[in-house]
Amino acid sequence: MRPKYALVLIALMLILTLLLTPQVLAQVISLEIEVTQQSYLIFDGDRLGITVSLTNVSDGSLQDVVVHSSAGDVRAVGTVAPGTTQDVNFFIENYQMGNNQLEIYATYTGGETAHRSIWFEVRPPNECVALRVVNALQAIYEGGNYTAQLQVQNLWQNPVSGVRIKNGDDVLYYVGALNPNQTLNISLPVPSYKVGNNSLQLVVDDERGSAPPVGLSFEVIPADSAVKVYLASLSSAAYPAEPLDFSLVVAASDVAGVSDLEVKALTDGIQPAGYFLGEQTAQQQQLPEINVQSLLTGQTQTQEQQEPSKAVRGKELAFTMQDPTLGNLPLAFQVSYRIGSVSVQKTFTVNAQLVVSPSVLLIQAQRIVAKKGDEATVILHVANDLPVQIDGVRVVPLGDIEASPAEFFIGTMSSNDFLPANFKVETSNLNDGDQLSFKLVYSIGTQTYETQPMNAVIHLESASNTNLVVYIAPPVVVVLLVMLWLFMRRRKWTR
Image 1 (spheres, rainbow, N blue to C red):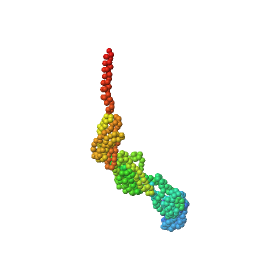
Image 2 (cartoon, rainbow, N blue to C red):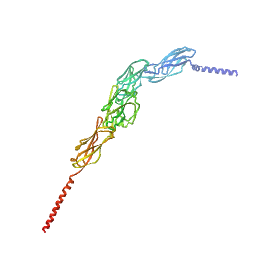
Image 3 (cartoon, helix red, strand yellow):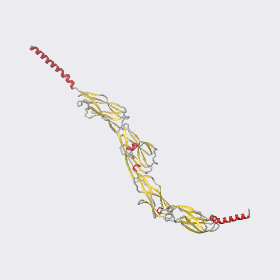
Image 4 (cartoon, rainbow, N blue to C red):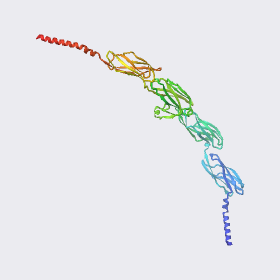
């Protein structure tokens, strides 16, 4: 390279160096900045305190160091020695309500640090104490105690006093003072409620005001629906005096807290007269699930008919009734229990249909025919179709029948016995086609039964019409013939 070209190149390099030196020096990092500690929530009127760490990475001291926020907050630091780190407490007073994002940086003689972003929220002072519902039941039974698990926290960086929880004007819980950032778990009882839906607006009240309400809703189920009774089995009696066996299932809600549970029979003759079950919960009910047919309490009859068979877990109670009455037999019961301060007492019935088949029968053996005024013979048969012996068997005429004997006594009849019962009936006061009624009376054990009246038709023949023709007609004919003979003879003489 020629000397004159080398001199030109050196001159150009010196010019470029002189021109670029300020920019190059400005880009040299001499001071590093980091935000090491801050709060993310403050309340209007407070200052946000943060900690800024400044590190001088240059070989010389940095003068006139000042920490800034993009909102205009400043903090003069002064000199930072080379190779040292200095923590600076910096306060932000310029912000707006709600969410804020600011830039934090530092300046010094001849330079400026990188910008660091911070975020924080500003709330009204009355929201400094927060209320949360941690756990609350959706429903309870009437009479039970409703308790909600709450959490109260002081979000402020200073103590708060006079903290209490209210629902409207009612103070439900007095908390008192809370230290900065203190959290307190509270078991809040609700002293009064109504059956049905309940809605509370819980408000935390303190020296700085009242926070927005927190909703708490729950349902109160009527206490009389906490226990249901189902008919589990029913063996209808097929003949008089056959024992009636049936069983009920008592099912108590597992969350109701039922105590003093008792089932009593109100109809005489049911054994046992009742069961005292005491406390009853799902865990204490030992009977496995069974299919039930009919709901007896807790719903209307229409709802019972529409409800399909289902399985319930409950306590099965067995009952027996000796010598049940024939026909439709409503058996009355009472169920009573307690839930907390509420006592429940309800009655219900089990409808038992006693089918009387086979039974004891009174049968007409033959047609009743007699002449008016004569005694008619009535032949009946008594059939014991029951599988048990019957006693005191007798057939009794009904109405104004003049019968002999006055009643036909048979006595004891074994199962499947078939015996006659005959009567003589006076017909003078009867007409053809009249009905003769009889009933059968018998006993099984200590119970006496009667059959429905059996009616038999009597057929009478009139004796008076036959006697007049037979006994009066011949003499009349003889007299007429004699008079005709005399008349003819007289005519002959007169000629």
